[in-house]
Image (cartoon, rainbow, N blue to C red; front, side, top):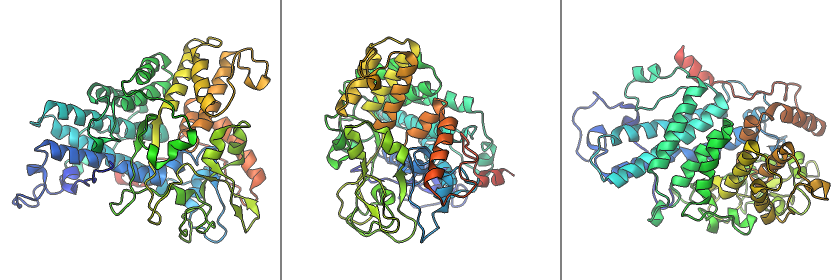
Length: 493
């Protein structure tokens, strides 16, 4: 967390590798026997459970959720082909040994392992009950979040909820479990988080930790994904009525400034911090055109394939209505590629001032209040369509901030006329796309709404018409889920 240095737990705490290796150790050496004795140690271990989120979201998360979709693609680097593994993910031609597919898997289970360790040791700990509840809530929330991302991307996956203390134990839980079983655990964990997390943290150093609304929003999205809209609605209403007073910030562009991190609109975001603690983000460098020099970041870009990714597609640019303030707050059209003489759009949501090259303090939004409003609008429409009812009010709150006219049933303007359940369904999906662009929601939304195949087939046609360099295999096998990592298969064999 910000203002809290992450403790990377000793390997022996995660895998018990020290058991039987050394029976006598100095008292100050932190191992299972003398750790997890007080609240400070549990809080440090909890920080370690948050830590994998940082590498996950700067590394493979945006590649596998945003760039996988029709929102973004990549700028072809004609001088360096070492970024082929990301190009393959964008074009649905990755193999099961793709490094990003494995990295996502590894970071996620690293986080799950740390949550399991904390929860197992917490059950018998003699610490303050309030602290115990707070730790339970955070670990349960994180485990649910890690599993929710995994099951949506891979389908059937291993399911473990206890600390692994031996090699044999690791192999015994490595079999994949049905996705339905994983969802049952996610729901149980999210509910445990709701029951135990505080509405807010009173200490400033805890700002950014999960709160009750974080878990309510997560569980609501789980139910939305399962089309159990009636179960999602009360959770979303609870977030709207939270004593935290969540609200839309008046200015969309200000959401992504350093000053508004963990703002009144933020429900949960991954924390980053510029500096030597290795907790920084580098989104603006990865998303800048690879041959932009120092003109975008203020510092020179590394040579090679580290930049030129998550480039907004033409379809994404066209998705914004005329006058939508979110377009200029999200995308810049200021760079012209000297090699092609064509404008290369790039994402600027995470472009923030910083003093150290490749080290920014830009947080990554996981859940914010606008998402809650749009999820509730969708759920209300799916359960009972009501022309110009509450769902319209929620949708138009989001549109108003963007500087757009309301969409209503019977509107004289055909572009704003939304007069049926299906029309509203399409309207809220469209609003989610532009409101949450480049925040890693698009692929998940396409999956849960059943649009992935049709949308990506149309996307393939568009991309092939614009990019002469695409190989014949590009977009020929549009899959809803990623292949299971080859390394995991080999380990089981």
